[in-house]
Length: 390
Ligand SMILES: NC(=O)c1ccc[n+]([C@@H]2O[C@H](COP(=O)([O-])OP(=O)(O)OC[C@H]3O[C@@H](n4cnc5c(N)ncnc54)[C@H](O)[C@@H]3O)[C@@H](O)[C@H]2O)c1
Image 1 (cartoon, rainbow, N blue to C red):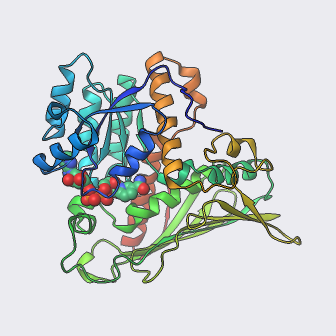
Image 2 (image 1 turned 60 degrees about the vertical axis):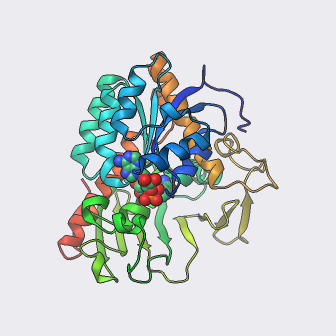
C-alpha cells in the first residue's frame, strides 16, 4: 500500500509548462505530483497569457520571479540558479510537446510530457536518443494506468487466470463534441486542427489511453496488424476524425476491436475495457473504477473490489485508499508521478539495475502510442485497409 512515505532521497525541484488557469489537465498533474512530497512546484510558464500565468502561479505559491512568460525564459532563468528546477512537466497542446521536450532535455532537465507524445515516431526516436545521451528521464502521463485494478488485470493475465487471451474489447467515447464547433473554445479549436493536434483528433486524444492500457495488461502480446476507419461527423473537423473504429490482430491470434468517439451523444461512460481469455474474462471501466468484473466460464460472475486481500500483490502494493473507500483518477495520477520520480531519482544515482526493472510510462510508452496513431492514419488513408503495425 502506498501511504506517502518517501521512497526517493529528496523532493524533486519541479516546474510546469502549460496547465494554467484555463487548462483542462494542469490540475491533474499537480494532484499527481504534489501528493507524496516527491515534487516541489518551484517555477512555471503556466499560460500563453503571461500576466494570467504569473497571477496563477503566485496563487499556487510559486515565487513571482519564477513565473515565466515562456518556456524558453523558464529554462534560461532556472539554469542560472543554484536551486533551479530539475524536472519539467509539459501540459500544453500537442504541437508544442516536441520542441519544449527537446529544449528541456538539451538544458539537462527531465521531462514529464502529455500524450500524444509527439507527431511522428521519428521525433520520438530522436528524443529517446537525446534523453539516453543525457541520462534523463521522459515520462508520459496516461492518466488511469496507475490504478490498482488496472494492475490487477495485468497480474491476472500474467498468472494465466484468464487462459489464453482471445478477445480484447476497448472503448473510450463521450458526446462533448456532438454539436458543431460554432463558438468552441480554444481546447476544441486546437484539437480539431491538424497543425496543432497532429495527424489525429480522437485517436490521439483518447485512443492512445486505450492502447497504452491494453499494452500494460497484455505485455506478452505483440500487435501485428490493424484496420482503422475514421470519420468526421462534423465536416469542419476533416481531415481529422471525431469518431473511429479500429480492428487489431495480435501475434497469438487474438482479435481486438476498439472505438473512440467524441460524438457519442449522451454517453458519459468514458473508458471501458474487457479482456477475454479461453477460461475467463475481466472487465473494468473508469465509471466504476473500484470494481473489476471477473467472469469464469460456467461459474457465477464476481465483482472484485480494490484494496481487498484477495487481490494480487501487484494491485495491493499500489493501492492508496484501502478497501471501502473510493480510489480514482487522482490516486492513479499520484502513482504515475511517483513512479516517474523514482525513475528520475535512480537516473540521478546512476542505478541502472533499478531502472531496468522499474515500471513507469516512459519514452517507449509514448513512442508506441505515436506508432499506433501512424498505423491508424496509414490504414484510414488507404480506405480502411489492413496495414502491418511495424
Ligand atoms: N493525460 C490525460 O488524461 C489528459 C487529459 C487532458 C488533456 N491531455 C493532454 O494535455 C495537453 C493539454 O491539454 P488541455 O486539455 O489541458 O489543453 P487546454 O487547451 O485546456 O490548455 C492548454 C494550456 O496550455 C497553455 N499553453 C499553451 N501553449 C503554451 C506555451 N507555449 N507555453 C506555456 N503555456 C502554454 C494554455 O494557456 C493553457 O493553460 C494535450 O496534449 C492533451 O492531449 C491529457
